[in-house]
Length: 212
Image (tube, rainbow, N blue to C red; front, side, top):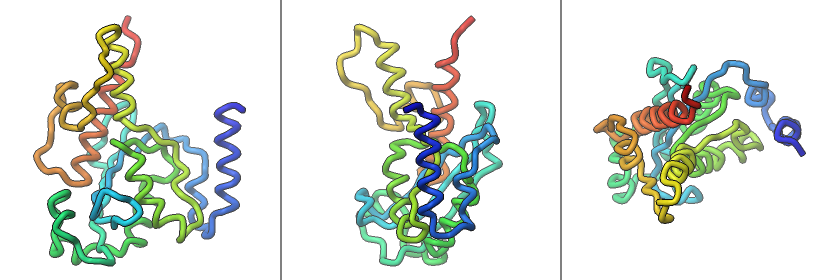
């Protein structure tokens, strides 16, 4: 089965499962030529128990990061924020007290991303967090195509090291930024992490282009 046929089948199944036709745009063909890089801040590292605290996203087009086309949302959790969560993401109770209800935040997020492909760093976690709320609400998870920059970077390093590859690649975002000579923003929040991840994607995409 070809990729296009498989994608079409998944799209048809998703449309049938969608509980609210108002979100049918998620399954429309994307013709924008754009991608959306996003990141979430959460109350923990287990998506089955953690709560969503913030979402940041930025658009990539023509292999350029369009920082002016961005999304920054603070989400009000249903439960309080524990001490561990404060250490992880530096968000306190007072920071999220005036945040959006999770469904309202996700509505804005879905309208921002549309059906465009998604980019992220360890994207599986962020998608799992979003899907935890989407599936009971809409009956589907995010149908968008997805690219993880940690996987792109790993493949790039293995290829460049060749016979010198020893089985270890440092995939911490800090280390990836250093290796690619990219700036690291001091504030680590959802938007800044999404922005840095987008820069990694652009750099890796440029490096992967054939040279004349």
